[in-house]
Length: 612
Figure 1 (spheres, rainbow, N blue to C red):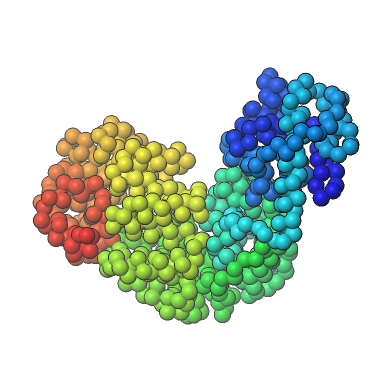
Figure 2: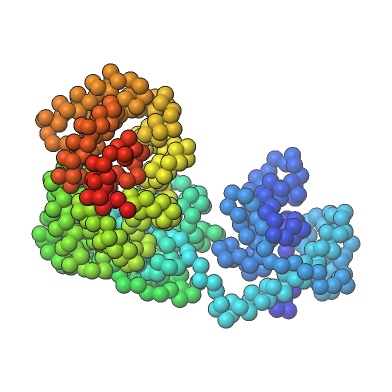
């Protein structure tokens, strides 16, 4: 085979595999079929590595790209497919007589191919004629590359958790914070062509020794950025390297020794150098404004406090510690927009996770989000925080949607914006749009349990109960203790699978929170056990006398469980007076179906803006 007048060589096994692929152009050939074709069905060899190496050699000869293939396409989990057109351009091709096993095959010209044990001369003819077509296509590929005509496909990158090399576990927050900041920085380079996996998914690999090829397959990425950080007082050393997963090539590596105050400059330098490397390989990227999270605070100690706040926020169980650190950060640097945005999210999620009345935190959340937007109108985090607040507590659906659109336009790689916007669309009953937005969130954060659970809840509210159960179960298979996924019980009840609902609920560790007793009352009541349901409701009301609880999640759920619609409607009015964020569920949650025929419920839908 020739390319640009140069004789090309291909070894026996790659040649055999190429024959098998060219025989069925456009069809997927599995790895098992390839192994059987080359070695036979009963071979006991490490065929995976041999096939990988052979495919790589074929691509090298053809100058094919695994990520932008012109000839051989990898179909993940299935095999390979020959995608270039195959045309017989003539039969006047000299093919040598059967050769030896150990030689190399050369097709074309006057060079005599070394032998290959192959009885079927028709395949040799097929290979020879196909090779001419491949050579012509390879020349075209070579010429097109010389003109830099490279398709502008979107690449995906994962920033793996930076290793903490300080030897001090108390500095984990700094390494984790640097990881998240790098994700934000790189996500701003060119979101239309470079997608960056969100923090939630990459943190699954913290301390992991999993093979990079497995990481790439699980996350759906072509590149990973690995790094480490060592901090000593006000000095910091950061190392980073960019790896292309298709062939484990180290594309770029660098080490930085700087003062702590320059840490964001280091992040900017790393982002710029990685963007330059990607540009060199795949063509120009469109530069986007750097988001607020990458803005350098005026004081290094404010940044340090911000990273601590970020660390506690991500635990989802230490919001008060997060708020404390973030309040100190903005006190030291009142212009720190991203710290205000994270402060707003901390207040909002603390209320949701701890089931606090909205009056306890809503105004603090609103003030922080508004301040973040005022300081930096280009902060996707700030606009997302504000969108959630005006949705949950003002029931201002129009403004909320505008803020979500603004956030996503500013940073299409911000998975949380897509996730919360999907919820927004779900509450409005716009399910097709919600599913599309949820899928975008899952692509950016494929291992996030929260996003996967929200996706299951979307199936639940759209009355696709069997699919909802399947999605909830997939989350619980990964983490049986992930409490939000135990909403599977609600889907079981709606699907009339009460035994499964109660078994799942009672298999969890016993808790004594109001929301747990409310859920017990609902499940027991709907499953025909009024006695246990009433006892659970009484326990909810005892807790409510001791401290304020979210009326929708608590007493309303419980009263509907025992079939007391009148008291449920009374508590819904209390929920409206308290501006409960749980009222966003009114239009779509099947829990409220028994109330939909009551005019008082319809009036409440109107007041919450969900009557259309």
